Amino acid sequence: MDELDLPQESVAPVDVSAWLALRGWQLTASLGDIAQRWQGQNADAVVPLLRSAPDFSLRWDEMLNRLGAAFQTDAAGVLLAVTKSGSDVAEFRATGQIDDSLPLGDAATFIDSVRRGMQASASSALQPRSYFGHRVPDAARDHARKVRMGQTRRGSYIVPVISRLPMLRPEYADDEVLFDDATYQPFARTAMLRLAEGLNAVRDLTHGSAAPSPRSITEAVGAGVSAELCEAVANTLETESIDGLEVNFSWASRLPALKAPQAIALEDGAVTVIREVERVLKGAPQVGRQTLIGYVKRLDRGEDDEVGRVTLRVLDNDKARNVTVELDDAEYHIAGEANTERKMVSATGILHRTPGHALRLTDVDRFAFQDALSGLFTE
Image (cartoon, rainbow, N blue to C red; front, side, top):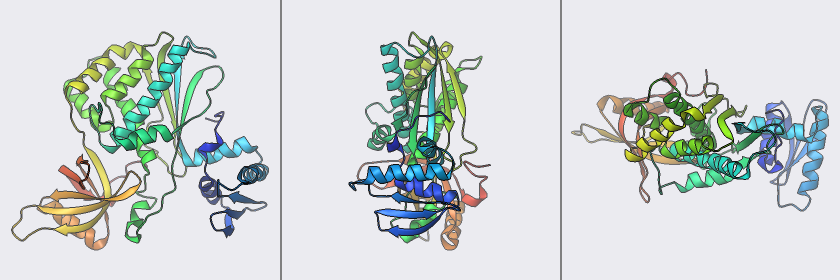
């Protein structure tokens, strides 16, 4: 990661501002959406904000040079530090008969498989499915287009994928709790986590001494395993020059993910099993379970009703949205207390996304206060 050659487009001005704040610098002046002045202990710098300004490139280079001097590095070092703070990075490393090059056909397959894997994981982050086919969500396609590819390293063949975590703000004051540090998770992070968890589950399914059972395969759907993810991995491992795939993750420091997988290795000897898992998932379409975190916005239950209907407000694809949930008596009382005391809750079930309709979570098997959980991503 320290040698990663980054495109400047992977870093936004707001990322620099957030990084400076984390380093203890103070915002001393602001000119609307044009520029900000930041003061450190022994140096200051102006962060240009308006990319459309005619002198943006000049001011951007000046800022990088001043920050490089302040932190005793160069412009590339500043970009690397900002990226590590505000972006998740997945490095796909091909192993095998490789030096500084790959046969063009194998390289094309490898890069296309990386793109397909990113898209499959983004799709699973929205709604875990065993097989998406032609029903790939538009948001997943958009995510696969937005992530950026860094330059490959000399002496090996690595495809670094850079996924910037946006700095989001709520549209309504009531939704501020969704963006707090304890619960905030932009879609870019959710998709990258699903990639790591999905690849980890593929390895567990296919690299053991025994063949995976149909039940273990379908249960892995909730972890991000899909026919499309298996196909992406298998396509790479079936090339003539690649006999292994290693994926290393570096998680943005401003949003720790301590329990997330850090490195995953897959070998071409497991290709036959991976293809079999892909076949099973295509032949038995199902929707996996997922957990939503949010606050209770509305309660609705008649005196004689056995179940109550609750509206949760959750962060979905970087937007606050309503989700309707039906709960039994005990769960409804938890929802009532959460609504009164403004506590966050989590609900696990099957999320239904129907175009033109509100989100619905059904078959809920867990509904609890969020603070009662041990934490999803931190120790």
